[in-house]
Image (cartoon, rainbow, N blue to C red; front, side, top):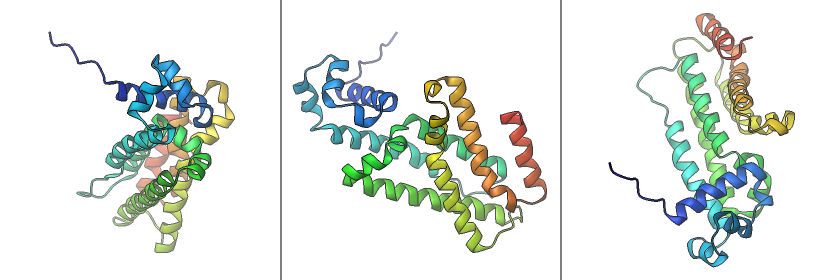
Length: 219
């Protein structure tokens, strides 16, 4: 039986740093804490990363790679409401996995120019995808909105998705890592974003959204 090779120190540092940033917040974690948790010397840590920003930037590269896959919405057919819900759920799962970027966003962008530029591009990409999904629903007449309304809707969808988990955290910080609470927060986040679209949905698409809400939220 083949044994998996041990993960490299660099990969372990990134994995541990992501967990610490997520659990305690990026401002509360420094390289000393990371090296202590890793049980390695600070010198060994600095051999792999110049400083904490270097660690953060490397984590963001992995986040970019994963979320770009989510944002690569297939264009072979028109999306329906269930496709949009699934897309949002996958998006929220990625946001949850790398949640410190969203919870500590203002502090990170104020202190990290590289991250500032990359996160701005990411938000722009999200708006483009949200607009594409809305336009896909427009095609068969499932979404009744003009171009200006679609632009505003796409932006609002991204705004809610970006800050939803921070909002959910404030409501119940002591249980924020409870799997049951997280699952509800993710599903509720999908619905909150879809609710922005609801006034523009017509016929079967509106009924499908109501059906999905009952299935996933029990409402």
